[in-house]
Length: 360
Image (tube, rainbow, N blue to C red; front, side, top):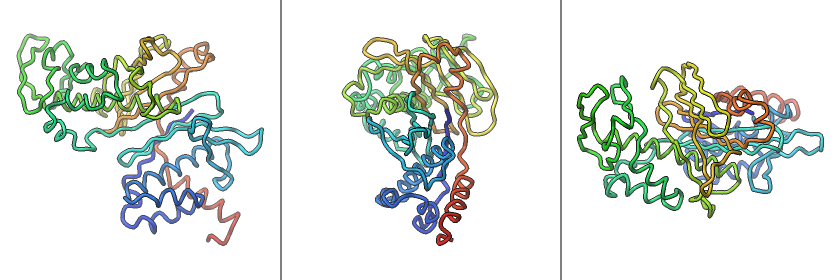
């Protein structure tokens, strides 16, 4: 299995059709039309990045040039690659894009379902919506068709921890106490620290932390639903609950990347590793419950990217995974790779020129 991030935030921003012409020409005519159908450049960029990521993923697994690849959809309308010949390699993958990032998870074969979602905290002006709408709990209640009553309650009035603005201390839920229930901004709140001292914190920090946790819930819900091939309009959405959810800490928020794995019947263990770069905390002990029962056949991970992004991955757990033990679980969440678009496309352009010199 593999996971990629393509950063398009600096690509094709001025004159899209001219700047992106080389990359557009790598697509099939109907795919180019799908990209250009979007009015706004940012949407065209993400759509093009999504297509390029899919082709690169299939090519990596099959070793085929892009010109020999036709992207398909399975019975659940999920993107995949179905080989033209019976002895070819099928590829399952899922893509998400938000605020300039394209995230992809791929797996060879057709036996394992996967889903991925990337969210960006504060991409929208949620703070104003929260202020104008009567508070954070009222804002979250606006998403009651997506989340269960328990999830809405949890997101509105609970906060597992809060990193103080100076970055030197993380307050636990016990230290936060009643302050965790704050739903309005611009309030000064008193909390009691472990050493018995009282200190004041701003409710703005509470609301921002709750927003980050809300988008963690959202990414998890999207990734799980995309694994199933459904959409957020699925009539069972409110039966799917996530528990033990905390937002992954940003890069540098606690000594490198910390991987936390629980024992939610997934044979998890705890480990940690340090890492430089854009990645923050990775969390794997989140539980999914469906209609009151713990889900054991889907593994979940959320990881922070830079300061505002959260990426969630959902992976179907097969019978052989349990017998393979913890190392197999680690294999299901390989480190993300930053996709080198120029390297990928240069190789394909060279192949294309070989096959058809008229494109030179």
